[in-house]
Image (cartoon, rainbow, N blue to C red; front, side, top):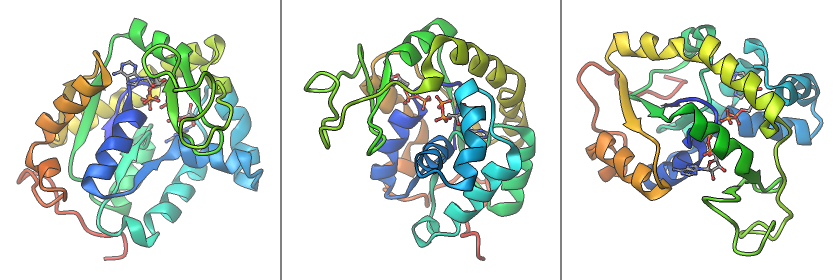
Length: 228
Ligand code: ADP
Ligand code: ADP
């Protein structure tokens, strides 16, 4: 599980790590945005909350997480990005499936604001860019499919302020929740993306090097699929 404020680089690192670990990258933000784009009933209900920078109600998010974890590719492990975000979600996750490790991404607030202001995404494949730190090869076009990049409505300044506040109030308490269990590790997630990836690998050590989630600390539960 990758934990940290909006803009900390969780999604960027998750896509690299998921490839290395050969597990799916499960981002509730991506799943919710896909539901909004597809105009499903869930998407219609979630859209206003997302746009304003508020959290989507727990029951809705838990519904999509349950469905996603039940898919065959999540049977042997998964990487959670952006979930859980409230203590109620963390409690529900406990009942759903065990997790191995929680990594907290530490980044100064001023840097988060700078990163969020520069974030652009591909509305088609969800690839993430940054006008400063990770520009596309051709201006405003996705490297993978050439689609015109967009700024997320919730990356505009008003919504960013709300999201940072929501993070402090509702998500930051999860740090203590997981620290008490001995599952929490922290990395300095400031600095260039490659340096952050190297710190993440070093922190996870053999967990990543082996390309599997077979190496765990003795205090963490053994991972099982949701159906077991
Ligand atoms: P970021 O990583 O920049 O915070 P995400 O893509 O994870 O953004 O989430 C975007 C928005 O989707 C959140 O601001 C919130 O409205 C909604 N969202 C994503 N995950 C959750 C969650 N676990 N619980 C409630 N709302 C969520
Ligand atoms: P999160 O999922 O935590 O909200 P993202 O991975 O989407 O964060 O990163 C937020 C923005 O910052 C994106 O535009 C991304 O390209 C950029 N970014 C990610 N990691 C770094 C980094 N280490 N240094 C500079 N910019 C970064």
